[in-house]
Image 1 (tube, rainbow, N blue to C red):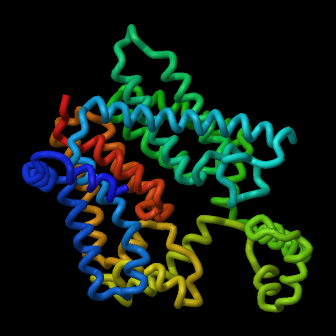
Image 2: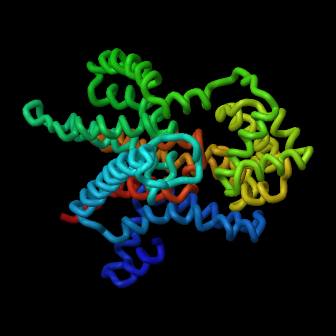
Image 3: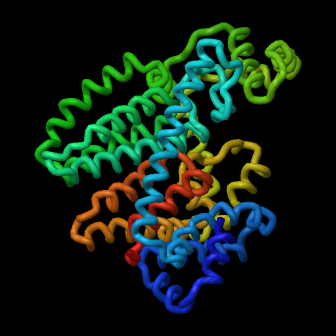
Length: 402
């Protein structure tokens, strides 16, 4: 994608003036400074892992590259519109394909993203459930922005319908991050746009959450897996069969094959028997404690780009990614890298106040990402970093051609 945009820029006019303009823009500057530090980390990183990981961060360069091409204001509106259309298409297809599969009309979930939670029924999309939940949640903020910008006599019924449809999908998908981020930031949104309605928001939100937990089975399952700490008293054989079911879903072959493999491996069998019930928050906390040891060893500059990949291959006691962007950044780039990274969001927030608080999404967007990055490595996951780059350009690029 970056190469494509670069070639488009090569054949355009007034290249020097455009480059000067782009470099002067605060958001672009913060991106370029952070990426330059990533490149400099080559000198203290493992070169093999450096080149394996650098392309993940390079997606951030889409922000200044898009700015170089000087898209028209109408093009930006079209991009936002197509983003929403894509999500609507995801939701409609997910509903029909999932229901036809549930009723046995389809033998498999055609085109929908599978590979996680194979035995659980929920509305899947064409991409990973976690990334999709973020797109859905932020789209609801887009709808609310349009809704509150409408005059009292021009309330658009279609916006209410879209908000209802997106919230319904969010409750019946497995994307906890999007839903919790939406709930956390809605008070901020109302406080800025409609402060008088903040009490009304809380009055309706609490009963809504209670009802959602009761009637939405996917949402209820995710809540239980996130916050349940009590022990689950099941037999050792049931634990082995449950683990075998997971291996079958993930890697194929029948359950009996994996039951035999587990029973034949004393170490594996002992791990399965002693495994506590699934609790994602507790599991991630355990992962974060392990990364703390690595961070202390290289606190200022970190391990360099690719440090996480190196840890996963060489360290026996860490077998999972950090699932936290801040821990990822400080592990690979240290305190200096984390400061440069957070500077990107500080610049975005400053833009909101500098433009006299006219565009509410300019404050919601960075807060949205700062919140959701506590839960996963979203800044290097392809779908979400493309989402971040696209809306960073749409919301903060200054120059608009009519």
